[in-house]
Image 1: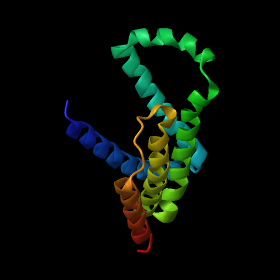
Image 2: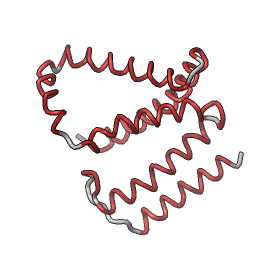
Image 3: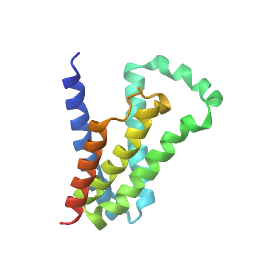
Length: 149
């Protein structure tokens, strides 16, 4: 399959994240608590995933017994996800979608270049080069311009 498909899928996922921030901020307004909104958001997502597994991957439940032998850092993605969602819920109404996502993407890009350079956390190794440095600088410059609105 062509990489174009995956690039489009990533673009659509990014659009979903932009919408998710506003949706979850609205959930916070309705509930009055960013932490409760985070819990409800994750609870709904968990229910959807369980339904998917029951319908399409029933055998996956047999791997649950392996969780106890997994290194704790490999489970930290859930913690990071919860902190991210809660942070977005708090930030979205305060600084706006473009500022928030610009800063988030800037932070992601900086760490992504480092992770790729060293091939950390299972990422394919892609050495830092002039193009990656310039792309990151341009992206951060874009973030600065967005924030200056």
